[in-house]
Length: 305
Image (cartoon, rainbow, N blue to C red; front, side, top):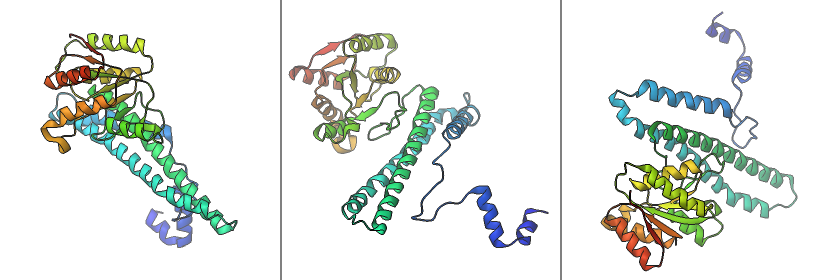
């Protein structure tokens, strides 16, 4: 008997029950959700298969599509990142309702049930956010493997509640806001801030890594500050990622400041009051940062590459 004949020969209720047995049922709005959030091992294995297939079969080396690989992989990781952020905002939107229900508890069963329902909803959304965050962090690892670069969002910070990141990359504006508001501890890594500047192309990365290793040996709680640029800054970011060292990234805001953006960025970096600055060969923008640091009494160590 084929599927169509089987469906026509049994009652609608039996068909529904059979589908529920095979595929499970999603709860209606407001009902408790007893389903598992995800199968972590299966999901991560599936993610690895997708990305390996993309690199090896869809955009392999030797093809023109390989030239588009990095931007496409970045977009894939960013999709997971945006989903985690969307769920995070959904949890935040429940906070006022939770506070109101907590204040209005009067011992009645209805109010208590409503509070439990919202708490469960917030917990479920948080668990989903954590799942997408772990998928994002795993995908970011494949991005680094296949491109040699560290994945970061175009705007904002790259942090992880589930501690899957080797190192967090904190946007400087988030860091400054967190310093003013101690409630936002997630954006305030504790440690000694050490800045790096230098954007010229570098052939010998070992000199840069050796200089950073020397400073890290002196300050074991080092937090790397940089502008997210090319050259020494890019190498320093990879070094921090490999060492599990948190980063504070000061990117120029071109939309807000136009041509003055790199110099405004320098001012923002110096507002962080780093312990010192390691200066590698760069442009006039790097020289501007070094000069301003000297005026503020911030030590500058120049390294030739």
